[in-house]
Image (tube, rainbow over all chains, first blue to last red):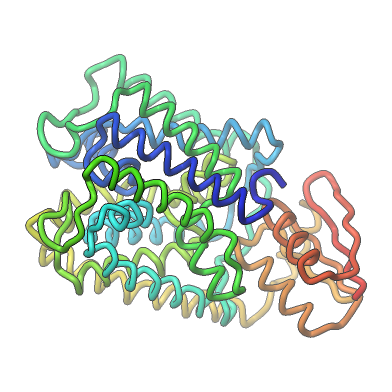
Length: 365
Length: 67
């Protein structure tokens, strides 16, 4: 059962992830970002010129490390399992909307925790929205929401993303094909090797502990299970100690690094992320890890996040330290409507039970 | 025999399905599960002190829950 056995080992696993995040922050990653999945997918999208926002372009080795680390450890632990076929395009949409919500708030759930640990009260406000989104998703699950079964597929299909990101990293390091910011968050980073190693360790730990930010709140709501939240607790405590020790702790709303103080949109942005993440079966970090251990469905979700990030910057939906944009606000409201629609359709689908072919294919698997 | 096939479902659907089957209480229950769900169901049954067996196949596991 590996690291996923007792609350104590889970909290320790989370604490180790916190240490990795602290090292990355200390080694030069942007303030209160450390290892933000949404920000780093956004930067990577910019590096590949999917968007051209000059301050946020850098192919982040952390993302590669997390996916490939999860891939390696799942092979070693014989947990690698190539599967696909659970409503991939709905997952693409969910990934896209996760990114819209994240970039309106300015951070994925992982960065929300990191910002909370640095005293950024905007992130504490956003937590209300995130928990509300998770609760909405949990309600849908309770009503029978499902994206349907996935089925075994060619082992090579599950390996595509882990291998492709490594090739992209090699291109990024050895050529000048990719864009790199000369100013802004994209220009601020830990050395490539530190980033890659940090990502690998983080990905392995996250795979072993099943760390998930959406899942931790979801499990409390649905099953009174506190296993996953103990991981987040461990990470939070370590980052809190790091921030206090380095003088980075600064309680307040104003002048927080790469953040804005529009409470309503911080709440609604993270509401979208929480809701979409529960429907997709995991937060952005968990999607990266699952895509590493063979899930093509999660890989499609990651592609949705990548394109979502590109759209957010191409069409001026992403917030900045100056605040939200009208496009971003509209995108959040549309996302909430689409999420409700997906949830209702997913519940309705379940009502007519599993079709006969479903059972037959499952029996063959 | 109350049969439950939760293979290929995303978390936490397998656990929720098993939980509600336990609540309904039509034993014995046979559960087919794969991936992370196997560990999770195992933990759930142990924590609820259920009488059960596991048969680990190649790609999935079969739980027989007796009570």
